[in-house]
Image (cartoon, rainbow, N blue to C red):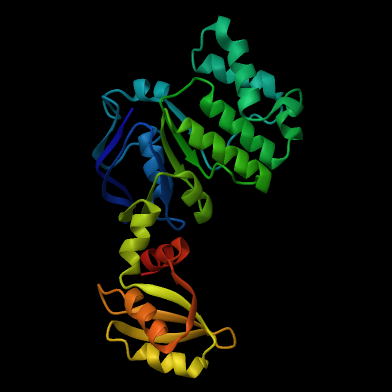
Length: 309
């Protein structure tokens, strides 16, 4: 079930929390939604879930409009908010039974659904405890179980791995990727490495506007601009290598990474590549080229560049 956001705007007083945002998320796609605090991520997700009404714009979940069919949309969305509100004094099983009834799951199927969620979300060892007795990580698993129990077409996850240990993060990440093969998933997180590992596509929002949208590879390529290479050359004086690398007509900049190890960072001129010329230089001078690899722009650097301006 696709999500289509058209010209979404939300104004609080004099502040435009979301400013004329448009995008589409396709079925079977996991979208990573990134942005600094106050950028408009949570406001956008709340609008999609019909939790709040936008000031302007339209959102369709499948064929349903948030303005005309909010109740139909709610049936088809699973939502894990960042705060993960839970009834602390309820045992896990009772809470999931309560949520299943709220979602109008057939009473004959509730027990099977609860067993499925306990298994999928890794709650078997804790299932008889009260929610108040759980660690933060296990409470997060209960929150994920309540978002999934009615088998929604769309899943909205706001900081889904908050409070989880590294092993749990890997497990939840794999679960989200598995879910994403059949459902439409929007995942918000401050952990950039997690978004990159989990999501098919990344969208960055800043000051209410979308500033980047694409795969991590596309974002890197766009931000990278010029070719940057890491070079290691053995059996030659580093200063000689440095000076001769600078004479290559496609090279814009040369710098040492580690002079003792004869490693260099070579920046090519715009829209040019220096790989062939570097190789030929080594052959001509009888140098041993042991490494020539591209230096990729980190997702963290792209994020900072787009959100600190």
